[in-house]
Image (cartoon, rainbow, N blue to C red; front, side, top):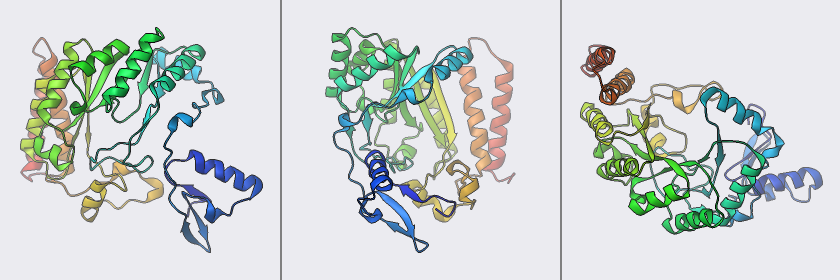
Length: 347
């Protein structure tokens, strides 16, 4: 607000923004009667009552995609990368408690649009645009197996051909779930792991078994779908043995795609609260992001930067049919730098 915002909407914004439009047009309500906002009064912030979360999200209209020419974006992406994707959301909230994950907007809840509503939206976007895939942005797409069966049945009943990818958790997967996903058009499943070390997964409050993650990645590939996974390094308490376990986890499960990032604390999360007293950087809000925050870890930050390179080059070696000398050399060099930072030879 110090930088010019008059009103800030907190949490879900649809109903709050509608109330604000009515306020500016008609002023039938006072600002302090509009739930879910903060505004300045006598240079002090005034927080109104928390906005009740929308229960029946089927009642919300589809995104007004025609406000901009989305086809320009699809065409540009396809020309550059060979395939274009449209984003779609089927649910709000997440009932899980991973310490690094922000639930600032939708809260720790689970609210789902009906399968019929989603299929109607798919029909609409296919009618209006030319694109290749749908990216379902939900945190845990397969959280409800009942809903997934309804979705697959609705796709089949309407004889719709759709190609889509999702994110989910290993503990909400099974052979039947993978088959339903494949039947309904899923081609890629991103399965959250975050670490190959059970110790670190437990520290994150992930509530998942790393062995089950590996099994589900393998089972996904067995059924002919692509498997992706997410990894973070540098979580509080992570040491060299945990990094080695993560490399083993990736080699053993052998996903088609994976991402690795250095852990960073997002404001409002348990991870932020637990590490705030150990922040090594105190950056200006207006010129920085959460990703730039560093905190005291088991080793120097650069150890984890080199760990990412070490993991990447070892995975390139694992996936190569022939011995590629450059990856062996890069892996050796990365490991050497890791050891120097781990043994505090470098700072």
